[in-house]
Length: 201
Image (cartoon, rainbow, N blue to C red):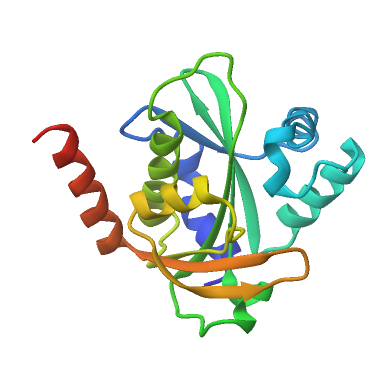
């Protein structure tokens, strides 16, 4: 699936897209969003994002290249008017991950970074993660979502499993050992239904 065609289909809805849980998605704006991203990425909590040593110009160049690629794009997510997270969606057929598994039509890759906040909301990161999944299935036409987080990043593994991801195996990238995992719409719906039953038996 070419990401540019996916986003052309979603473009009209994206301009005013609001998730049922109140999350708003918009395309990343360059250069307006770059100083914020640089602040996020240089914090200690961003170690797994692998951009702590990047300058603001390098962050801008990286995301400009992504937005110009035609095979990947980035979104900013807002909650109650506050910028809350960055999401990257990409076509695995045009990414290095294609060397490690057989890409299917409808596969869509994903990375997510939840920004810092002065106010802690219980369950917020999980809510953000699930909102992004809903957005990818409903508005980007994903049939299956692919992730490849660092194998030692236990927090993201917990989030992945809460959304229904099924882990396949570890693969070796230049900068990390990554855990390859997949989630279909059915996997996601079953996993989140189970979560709702735990909260509201």
